[in-house]
Length: 160
Length: 102
Image (tube, rainbow over the protein chains, first blue to last red):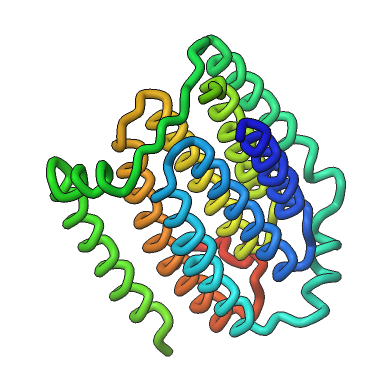
């Protein structure tokens, strides 16, 4: 079970690295779907099965498919791949990688001071639903208003 | 059950977040920038789930549901904007968006 966590973490990190380094858009999207499914496996090992299923269904299944629809609609073609390779010259990676490496070092430094291990007890749908209908019902209502706003603006922006 | 160190989960979330950050900073295609933003949002969701699992509360998953909702609304609006940009400029290069009106 614990080995599964580290395997899924490795798959997620490697496929995310492939997303950032790809030049073909559709390949990058498929790698991103793989990364999201690996993170869903990590959620399951951490004792959050509801979040794992939600990640697989909503994030990898709806949001990434929306991305695919729009990319197919834009119909970019083969010339975009050579253009993408031309844009990814090696020298543009230097400064962002250095700055991000400094940030990552600081993050790891801060997080390594935590020396408590977590025992993954399963927190199932019942506890999450009790919270969503109980103390956090206002957050659910606000999330629905946010989705309504997203719907109206997406309709309006995609019109001719 | 055996134990996973909390910091390992948080470090994985940090690595994923940093990879998304590199993608946002480096890429010139606007669709790739939006994908890298999704990577960052997913990494922060992972951090919330790890934190919720460490204390055994369900609030981590509740916060993850909120982040998921936010990401869905943001992707819808962002893709609508990409469609508008492509109709107007016929390219997905970010650098055509370098002027404000007036």
